Image 1 (cartoon, rainbow, N blue to C red):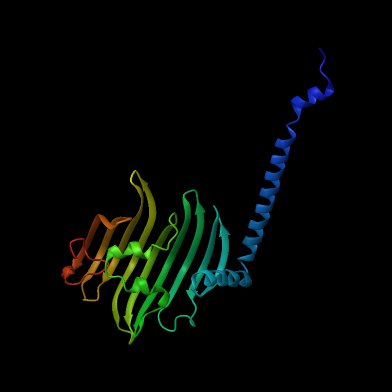
Image 2 (cartoon, helix red, strand yellow; image 1 turned 90 degrees about the vertical axis):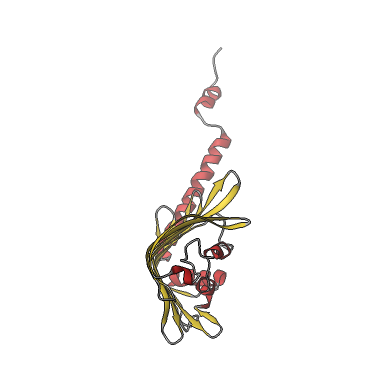
Length: 252
């Protein structure tokens, strides 16, 4: 039996619905590509950086200035020369060489490189006020509360960070230099837990005890804010005199 021309075309042409789906996907990718190009161009302008700063301030309350911005592979928004606005923090300071916010298969990723944070003890707390919870931490078990507002799947990374704790008269209470910090979420048979890794090249505690090459890993999960996995460090002086974030697991 001879096949008609329409029968033969059915073997060659894809179904109409499939062509429609492919057409929608092509249009979507084209629009997405255009938006990425527009964003990549916009963030490089002063107006684009100011728009991003306003967006962050509206959602976090943190007023920032941004030197430069760009879009980077694989899908990252990169902000350079980021600093806290002086009208928001009359005392203290926060600066970062680079802040990178990206999206990965496992969730969002926030990476801060070259951070310098100066915390100043004033009459009613700490400045900059937005970092008051970090300034007042005295126990590593408090880290779980610090990350309670972080999106569950977000990974947080600090690279080459420095933090100073100062008195209002300028005296330095304590500091940490060469700080590397990583926190992400792990899935286990018993549920989700957050994993933390901390490394510090140099630590000066408020009691004058000096430390170097401090390294600790721990996890937190609902109902159990601290399970120590690893702790190493070299100290000059009695670290047991004061409990702080750098204390060994035996100090309670």
